[in-house]
Image (cartoon, rainbow, N blue to C red; front, top):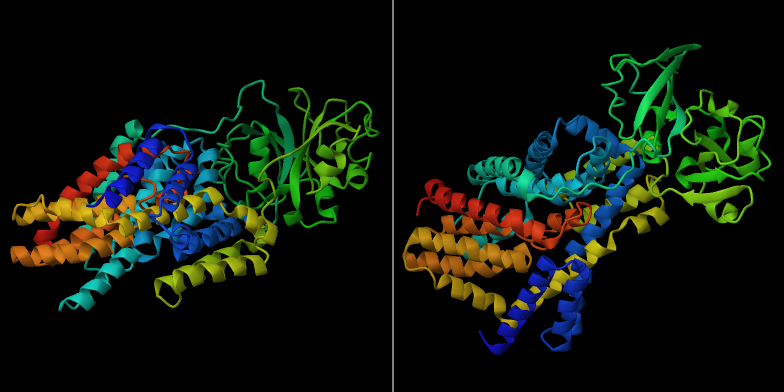
Length: 589
């Protein structure tokens, strides 16, 4: 390698160590690396910024909009509950996630699957008090390894198969040929995660105050007549283990059922009285089939998609102090509906409309998006605060959102549309069918993730332009001493190393001619080497930038760069050893 290649490699290694051993943001570190290559002439401005126009980057941005459409319609909660159920532990949760995700990723593109499930698992983890850092990385790993099972599971398999068909006389692989190697890898990966994640994965939970002195709201929820909860017990409906909340009583046909049993079966028009912290109140608004019991909610002029939840503390100068919420015509006076009331730890045994307001009462209001701006300086309230991500879901559009998702997956999986076009069509349909507003669609994109992916493309381009990637491949291959199994291992780990630094498809394309040449030199079949490249380029566990699903879970899981290194490097070695052992058995030398 020349000096330019060595310089590039030193910058890349420095970026890796900075991300692994400091708390600097990954997007900042990678953009600094791209800036260095730009300033030193390794990359031209066009090459440095090409990642921002790359199809993969734009696709991920569009998938954020699609997943937000699913979240805002409440479809996410339905999918999560029906797919994952109620976990008994973190290990059980990981198994419930990884098994179906691996199967789906074998048959469908894994990127939209991960995009869809990230917000779903966030809500699921909060509901059952799970650590998101214990489940997000297993989600990505299951999607990655599931893609190795079939020819259509990942784009890398299709790219390498195309190279085999065009560059050799081999007719190519069948859609399920790779299951012989991918199936065992899925089983091994799941077992590995279930065993070691309790020690190697961090335990990072959001800080939510469930203590006795937390502000406790009281709210009433109505079981709608056509609710899917009708006929289910409290436990089956998922209302028993609400984090930070509990069911106080049920009012049914003017009868009150206190100390409700978890086996009590819900009926239409049941009024459920809950007590709990504000996060639980927000979660309850998202449960399909439950709606706030106040009739004032439906008299607001704006649609529910244009509303949010507000916390407001009543002041002693509020004109409605001393009046009940109903008699004071709170909804008409403030264009807001009272959803819940908290009063200094006191449990209020009245219907929401009958509660007489006192100074210091904290009200949870459903109102228009401009309420905070209008009343921030009002003397009627001591404090007005908007609750993030509190827009009530539009459950009536959940079916539409799921249909759009399935349409995208089918069109892409059967190659009727490219992934970019499929994601674009789905995102536009989400907006046009009002599953998500245009403003929320813009806000749903995680720009930090987009910057990281785009910068990773710039880093990969610098590796190729400087000759550093080719030099690494040549040096690693020189380690082989003519032993086929050793050569196969070198090909696998050389490809895996390149995949950790550049994109998986680029690593596969770069290593393909080298692997073919090595097979010819050793006078053995090229097929085990081709399989090694497919698996190594797809099964990228060691770094977050090696595969886009790793990047997608990086932020939501609260991970650091070193978290992937700690758990991913051993898994990469295990997968490599299994591949080197099995590939020549299925496809002999």
